[in-house]
Length: 349
Image (cartoon, rainbow, N blue to C red; front, side, top):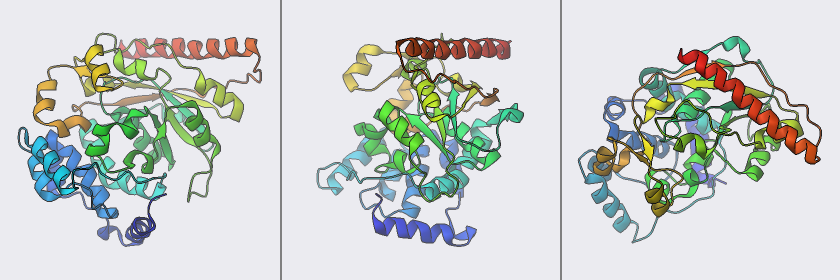
């Protein structure tokens, strides 16, 4: 759990008047439009609500903004911490902090940078648990997921939790870039079957309504590594979301995202280098030179318009866990994939 001091401090902050919360200042607006500054926004917001003695300081933030300065900032922090990595605290989902982050940081980014919009909102149910299944592209930090989570929360007041690759929780780059357990505290769920099922079954902490809204990419990592050339060709769907939908009687809400490929355009996946650095994908594109000079841009993405087309609810109704049931599960997953592929092709026309 988050340490008690940090949790009490956060609750006190969130219960105060709105003016005493985090204010998106002129400096944050500067960081939003200057790509190396995005990492500063995330860490500053965390430090506003949490005690984080191992986090970045103002000298290091300043170094982020100059070419090659991130490497000096990294050295400075490493020396300051006594030649060790930042402490890995145990973190759990905190809906209060997610709400603060959504309103104070995600809101300006989604509205003015990604210009996210929900289409066909009439297909959104009013209540009930859901597995939201979306096509995934972009080969970068999962901004298509975060934007959709924000829009769904604004539209229905839902508490939304995205599933993400385990590497976004534990890779050394992430541990140095972002605060410890940042993804978990914001509601991220590891994209592994046991964690997926636990997130569906467990009650949401501090939330009265127990509806579970989970964002899921059925293509998995295959969706990201397909690259720019095949950006709108859906890869084979995993079947775990069909199985869990059936087991827990939770409907699936399919969503088609148009525009996510432009988050990191013209990218291809370099498999050999990807394996060397132990990342699930490594996009190679003209933007990589900037990333080498400004590693803090690892959480940044190109400005685009993200349009989300809400599809009618899907229910499975398998109730059959025999060998024949597994075949039916696989067939249903691929039938949904084909249906979404047809919708994508129609929208692109």
